Image 1 (spheres, rainbow, N blue to C red):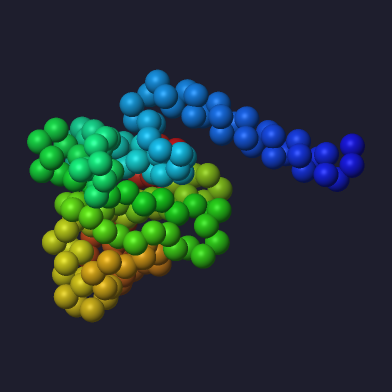
Image 2: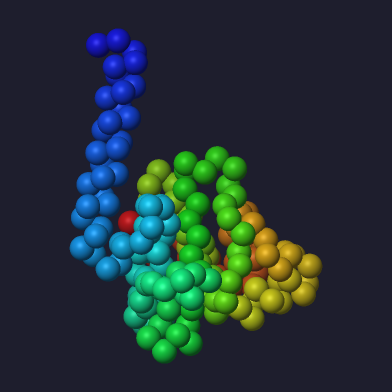
Length: 167
């Protein structure tokens, strides 16, 4: 087997694993969604987080009206935007924080395990904007989880033993 054949086999293995995930996810409400598999995994972790930490059962947003958030409570008083940054993201940055959410969650994966979960509510986010710590629509960055930054100062960061059961 030459080098290209090895690389092709590796690529095919990845694509098959991706297809298997998508095929199985079709039948699991918590994993349904678009083609962004990492985003779906982040949403699954956030669903678990809200149930475990706050006793809230959330629902995945489905309609285009709900595109400004990923999860919500049945009465939609709680609307959650979820972002995930993994070891595949070398820049430590992902998309902008926008939308009509009440709570924002950032999941940090390293070696495919949850390392940190950051949570901030809208009030804490607005305070961070007013204090000049972030702009109103910042890019999501891993550094937001550090002490003195968005989650570390205006929300909370869950680490260690408390995140082990999430993935």
